[in-house]
Length: 171
Image (cartoon, rainbow, N blue to C red; front, side, top):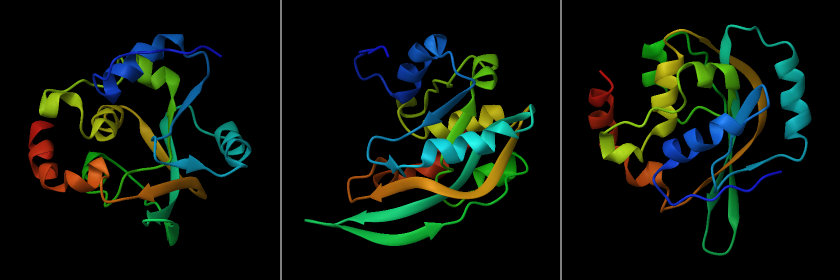
């Protein structure tokens, strides 16, 4: 294992800095507030074993939790939907997850796009998915290993009004 340190220039720049060092076939993106089930790696590994070569992203369902003052409350499982193209992706109602990227597909598009919108520090996941969906398929499987912690300071929650402006920037 190697430790990399970098000043905060946004997630896309940080991930692009790490991408040349990745030696695995797949990359799982795990947000800082979220966590995986104890058996997540074995569940994901089984799904990846049968994944078609033209699939660049595997995703499933999200288990949602609400952060309270002194506790955390289970809200339920949000089932994923099948994405068949860019229109489906851009109208998806919640963050796609877990996001398990095929490393070769990320390298083929030269990593995570660093866009001008908000200095590339917002909606980085949608930016890369928008690039990948152009020439690759995404694969939904009905599995739940990813836990999302929702809280009042969530970047996604506090920036909902920016979504329409972001979509215009993708055109």
